[in-house]
Image 1: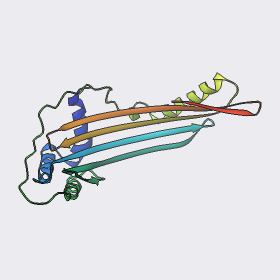
Image 2 (image 1 turned 60 degrees about the horizontal axis):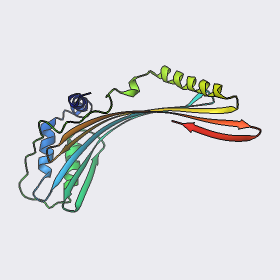
Image 3 (image 1 turned 135 degrees about the horizontal axis):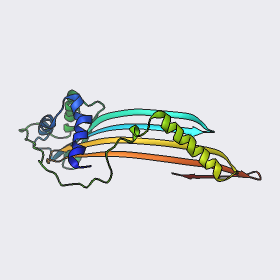
Image 4 (image 1 turned 180 degrees about the horizontal axis):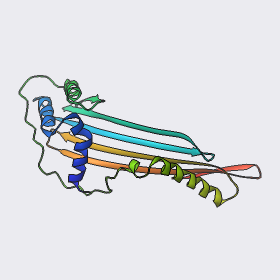
Length: 209
């Protein structure tokens, strides 16, 4: 997937719902970068996480969560200030930016920040498809049950099987006072299988993911 497609996803996921655009981000960074401050950046992130756990042929646990926020960093010489807004909306970001800037002395005129029209090209290592949407709930449970049956068929000495499926979909956007405006979309999936085998009273455990 191209950089422009990643950028479109980042805008749609992180900025558009809060009516934030690049010009507003530029103004926030411009207000932060007083003469005594060397560098500042904003790190937007949205994380969708889902997990399923099957044991003894039954679903024992399921979890789903969505987290969004903005981390803000300000650097003045050897000092660094951090602040975080756990909601993506303009007022919260402005307050966090002010908090991060307190490491520097106030005063002086603010500087104008302009993001580069074209950043260094990055070759995507994977598609930006959301793995959490690849299968519906019934299909995910069916997959875990099939893995359970397949593991038990391998060896009659296997007495217990535990299977877990986890998916993460992260969308990241970084805007910095040096003009950097970069995005990344990270679809991650992991399937784990753990078995317990028993023979003549002796048990052994093995796993693979």
